[in-house]
Amino acid sequence: MRTFAILGISCWSGFMLMALELLSGRILAPTFGSSIYVWGAIITVFMLALSFGYLIGGRLSMTSPHIRILCGLHFLSGLLLLPILAFETPVLDSIFDYTQDPRLGSLMASVILFFLPAMACGTVAPYAVRLLVEDHKAAGFYAGLQFFFSTAFSAAGTLLTSFYFVLIFEVNQILLLLMGMTLTMATAAFLISRQSSRGRTL
Amino acid sequence: MRTLGKYLTLGVIGLASLFPHSAAAELKTIHSEKSLYRNIFVTQDGNLRCLTFRRATEGTRQTCITLNDPQYLYFPYARMMMGSLYLNPNPKHILIIGLGGGTLPMAMRSLVPDATIDVVEIDPAVVKAARDYFSFKTDDKLKVHEEDGRVFVKKTMKGGPQFDLVMLDAFEDDYIPEHLLTQEFLTEVKSILLPGAVVAANTFSSSGLYPSESATYAAVFGKFYNLKAANRVIWAQNGALASAETLAVNAKVLAPALEKRGVEPGHLMSIMQDRQDWPDSARILTDQYSPSNLLNGRGKR
Image (tube, rainbow over all chains, first blue to last red; front, side):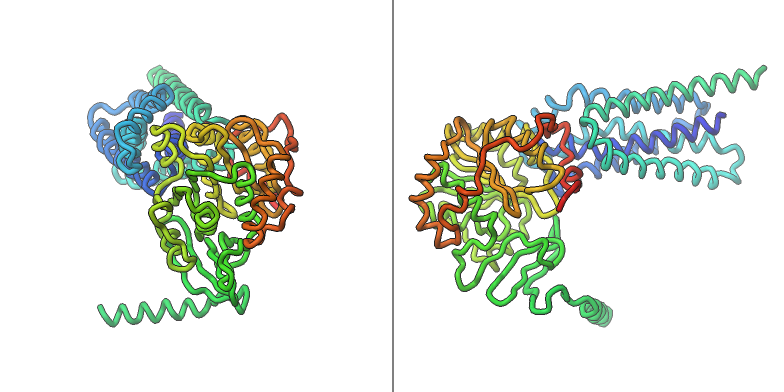
């Protein structure tokens, strides 16, 4: 059950990350257009945020690793979608007032709106690997398993969002959906882990 | 290194010769380029020179000119776009979003010589191809801005209303910049229009996008004129739409100048209509909901 919960979080974290990256293009386009600069800025910020997330997640896993902390990190990544929903328009408007250069503007907007949630997603991967690995000989196997599930679900998040979700829902509705699912997944995994640890002590 | 370069070049030439542009044997590709946004081809077939995107085949032609008569508007959509002068025959300040080969700005430059024209084109390579192969020329009154159309409009909004004709021609055969087809974008365009100013938009006549696109234009501009042939062109106006009688009068005045460019007198008036031919339930496209490309892919001819 524990492994199932860890992989479940890995899957949804990957899904949410790429769905968010895809939507971020839509969020910036009305203000900074959809030129190659805007996509360049978005991808740059997501990659940077992930890299720092990996670093932080890995560091966190060094001291008393526990699935509850993983649930907390995942919960946090969902919560961090809230500022996008709440402040997207005033943030974009004030950046546009400050600079109309799509390169600087979209870099600034991506950092402010997307850096933290993407970084929180990044913390999940190394932390999950740490929890999965019990014997260092199997470290590579579990790392591969975690990467497989999170990346495969990233692919699913990209495809479903770009082909289907945008055809049915508004951008903010999809963000709400992603947030709701993330909070639910984190809570469910937390409850599962509590139950299974109780089971073990009994 | 030099030898390696030579082999690589030979390899590329060899590969290229395996895939000749065999779609039409007489069609010569005189320029091809991979730009930041697309593949650009300039092809020539006798006197017909065309700009095509993506593939060097007929289906994706953006602009064509006839070299022996460069004033002639080869594509019906270009004639339909020029017909927007029927609503206001004497614009002073024109904005054109999407350059292509530059046919529309050059035709406007010669038809309305006193007007200042701003053209916005996102792809620098398209601007260069228009200059090099389609006699597109900028001057004091005709300027080209290399940037995203929406960003240009947003910047221009700070200066208030200033245009009396806006031509939207940024859609490709199979790609729509979705942020240029939303209620918010059209509202921004409307805010830079002087009272009575005209919007002419080149778009698609039959696809799953038609109802939503129509509903979106109607939401911002109210009633508009609709012209349908292979393409669809919308003529909308900021304020009350000019009556068909006014258009007929202007069409007569403009007929000699437009006829030289291939616009048959009376033709545009005969295909123009202002009745709603989409369901009331059509969903309006907004910045929040803009799956234009997905809709356009549905039920396309």
